[in-house]
Image (cartoon, rainbow, N blue to C red; front, side):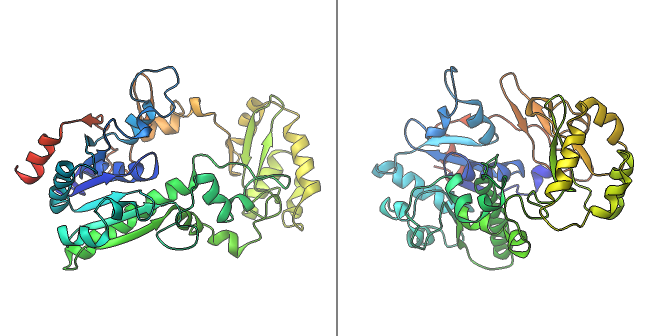
Length: 364
């Protein structure tokens, strides 16, 4: 059922690395025909983090699963005419060039509208198409630094690097949402649209809670200042997450660990340095297995911190059917069940010749 959502929609993917390919893979997951256009020799992401492996990296295969990949030299007249023909038949074009690059290649916003007035063109860039930082080099860590994310994430001593990259994924999701909105408007009679999606802007849109609360590192209710929303280390150097924000869940925790005197301390002034220290000492007194037995069924918003390699085999994750294992990598499928049906495994990325795509899309 999921594969029927965007059936018949054609997507040109001119993006690289993570944000754009992640977005277009979601289109492919929903049934769109996604053709990824790369420069001769392929995009740099093909060999990203290959280590000692030869050939295409697992990361590239995961992020581009379900797509067909072609190579075009956009400085070559013949290949430029091929892209023009594909643009004329596309519903969506998603690219991640720095502002101005696509214009210099002859495919700026005005030219694309001439080629296809119905096209939904999503320009996914680091800082957006306008503003003093629009041409500044950057990566996810820089975007989360500007938007206050690092200011709220970590301990009172230091920020920590969020993983996976927050703004990259936020930007990809914002691109998908806005493209789907533009396609819906087009189905009601509107023309195409030019969508300016910045990774930093998208991450900024997630900071509303931080602006509403005191979210300074180690001080806020949800940023390390509260005993009832905290990560604690166990005796055997494992970690647990505890988040009984509601009084009834907090009371359940306090009673389960035989410290009913803590119940009335939940709303002490932040940061709750003394109470946090007491609970730290408590959790450090026993191994994780002890706390699993004592708290798993205590209805107190408790969960052990699961290491990445153990996630696919967790009973809940297995039951949800979202993890697909391959010989040399593991991928997570589109995280939506449709009418009770889990998503099906993706087809592998396919490297195809340009003529096959031209024939399928343009008949030439």
